[in-house]
Image (cartoon, rainbow, N blue to C red; front, side, top):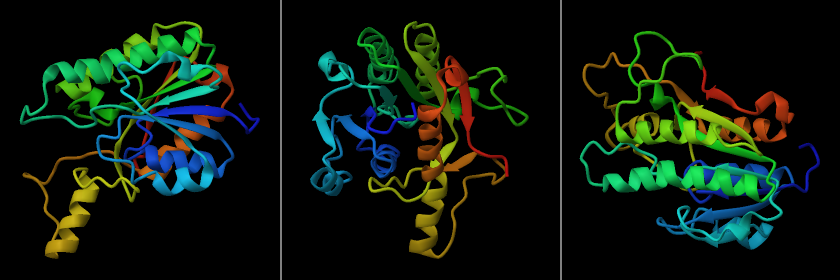
Length: 243
């Protein structure tokens, strides 16, 4: 997909990753439509919508009008409940609806409307706890509902025919975004360092987490968008580094 007036629909485009990724697409000359429920408002996109003419559709990923997919070249599906919920504040049904049902609905609609590529943001959490460093061939071991529903979605997406599908399992993302999140480990540590002059580490302090900068996530998605279809179709890629 090298020709650059390409049309890309980004679900969750006003979110932490989405608002960085959408700016990257605009910089590269893509034509962008954002579909987002705007639960956290639209301030992360307001400036670029005014200047750059990004189309914004305020809608729910579970029920939006499929005609929005007409004429799109690619869908990048970032919309999700993007955190585990150890306190159980969120109705479990919502995890199934938003993290599983919605992306499977979207990829099926994309295939039906002739969209060429569908890219799904999954998570390294599908691997759960493992003794050694994982790669794409490691057995999934999702521990909480967030990871379990993401893994269910992966399987559902890969079973759909008629559209190039790629799964990206993202490490824990960090870095500055117009829609900032301080619940992610590196960002949380940075915030406590700034506010208290010290870094808080959960016990016992020996746990390991793969991390990846939000700008690198945006670049990884662009690379999949621009890769030949046969290189990325049906593939799962871990996004992060061991360095």
